[in-house]
Image (cartoon, helix red, strand yellow):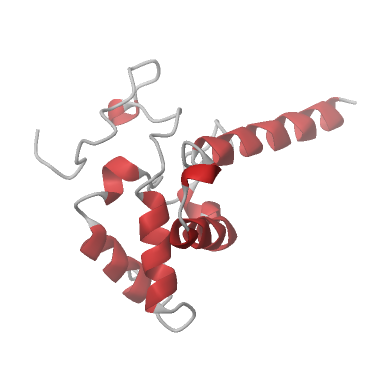
Length: 135
């Protein structure tokens, strides 16, 4: 019985997290952004989503505030990967598909579990702030 409750709670939490990492309204997405959402959901959440509140994601959670202004760096990371951290997708995805993912990510609001410096209970960061800028 406890195992069933545990599995149900994990399933509910993972669904809520993935939904939190979606755009405001699926109807407001253009065709390219819809394609990007589908590609992101198929290839990226294993590393770029927090599916359990007790575990941090393997890689940064991606949303509008991290993408806007960093499109070229993100495109390069998707295409060529990061040694020892992220595989390259340039042979498995077209430039159009990579651009669609980036366009979709520019519509994703700040996930509810994000807190500055990882501090629980802190207010969410400014969604349009560049996290790479010096403080």
